[in-house]
Length: 209
Image 1 (cartoon, one colour):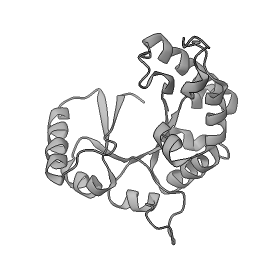
Image 2 (spheres, helix red, strand yellow):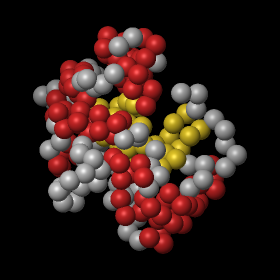
Image 3 (cartoon, one colour):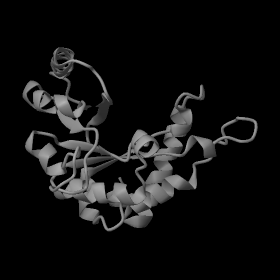
């Protein structure tokens, strides 16, 4: 990717359509004329249709999707629906989906393949469990958890190397959330090298880059 990719996950905010429209417009206007950065906004589901009309230079993404394209799945949203309303990206495997909704590696793998099949680009989140990243004294061990490798391998199971161009792997330092131990640039660099090694083993160095 030639551009820096900035992904803004709005989570369950803002609370009103008016606020969403104002924020969408402000971000889109602010990015006009900037050539080396691509911003992806991921608002809540209710604001996606509005966002698809408001945005011109900023790309649109969704915070989640289901792994089936259609059917009797009350409350779920399919990748095909997201694609049809103008989404280009979708977040899959976010730590909060794992924590609050019990998403496991098998579910995430289904979502990855379903989203790719619908023509979406996948923002694949991986990260250690905070409980496994500190010693008995509460100090971070500075070791990348083997769970990252497991998450990545399982999420990409049966995903062809030709599809990797449509996958962005995002490292979530879950151990840093609310702990007072922020991730440093060196931490992120270590994770990047670790992830690239895993991808190189699964595919090739060219695809990993």
